[in-house]
Length: 75
Image 1 (cartoon, rainbow, N blue to C red):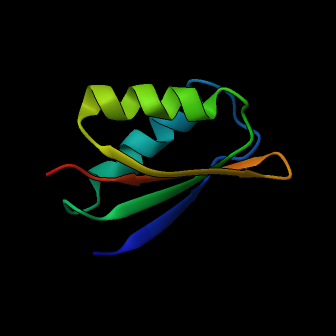
Image 2 (tube, rainbow, N blue to C red):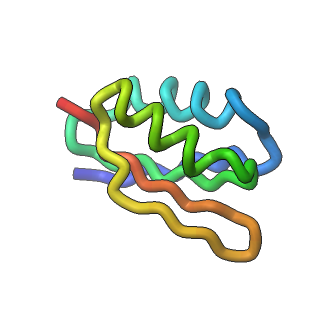
């Protein structure tokens, strides 16, 4: 299992989710993608995205206005 970091700070919905979806395509099942986002809607957006796509949202934290969302690719 590996972890990739995707920096989408400064982008607003739906771009963070779209970029994450594209990044997930190149990962193997079980790999993790850590998304760094500043859009206040990002936690809810990624929760909905993971539920719809079958991925797991394994972590969500906020520090100084930056959200770190950790997704595990389904497979």
